[in-house]
Image 1 (spheres, rainbow, N blue to C red):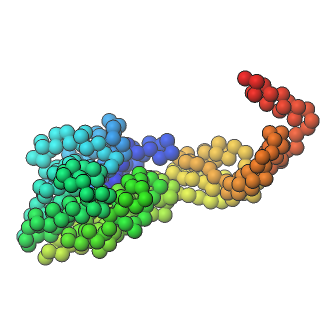
Image 2 (cartoon, rainbow, N blue to C red; image 1 turned 90 degrees about the vertical axis):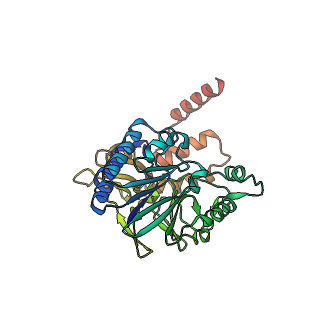
Image 3 (cartoon, one colour; image 1 turned 120 degrees about the vertical axis):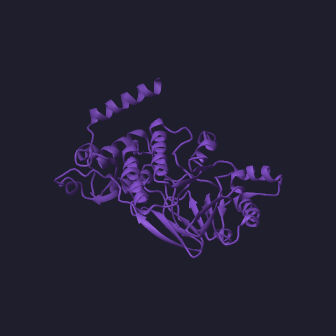
Length: 371
């Protein structure tokens, strides 16, 4: 039996103000669905954060709906849990009706206690679908005020699930959480403060596999847990990550894993170099890029001049200006406005103001203060 494990699609995502809709559509239509048609998984596990925000844009909802329809046409079941970015109430719409088509949504704690059982060619898997939860929900659910922090809450939930394990069956936990010791990215929302939201990976040990969502970098979490990671890069600090989703195979009761790489429509890159070298491209680069200028002096209107060659330019940073800015701030601390004005023109524009220009600056400064 084969399953796909993926998560954190974040449909409707923006990157530095640029819509990633066409990139997400490309991933689903040209990579994920063809892989499902080719590999014929019995079930697709989507471990939370289907959407990027609670009220998803209509085009994102339509894209997800179309993807679900295509998967069911392939006779593939779909098991989805709500993540911290999803609206569980909106996701639960038509939950009961969709179950009849083989699409299973887990949006509240009670859903995890009705595991999904998959059977094929003598192999059986029991899926425990645990949606993202707040510790207060777990305290209320069990009427136990002693449960504090996600670690204690996760342990209590898993302790309640173990008696539900069926014999001669592989057991998979699907959840959306932060496993302690894992590597995070800039594009993820913080789920905790001071470590209170971290879950020890050892809690996943009773299961044969824990299909995790939330962190965008593909990585293991202990012996049994794995983050599939997001299929696309959602921040520049993810530029070096190799994106993928997971193909799981169950044979003779043993689960094996294979990462299926994702080649995006447009990559996300951080490129460093001298301004003149960055201008030497013969053809525009369509990837999303952050450019880091290594020039030792300021470059005027750098972004505007580079934009034609980098149409999906996200930002331009100058390592020189960052270093100079820090030193200049210390040097000019507690100085008067005219001294700051002179220093700015000298350091940034290589220009020394004349007496009449300084007089004009003082006049303008007085007008601003008198308002």
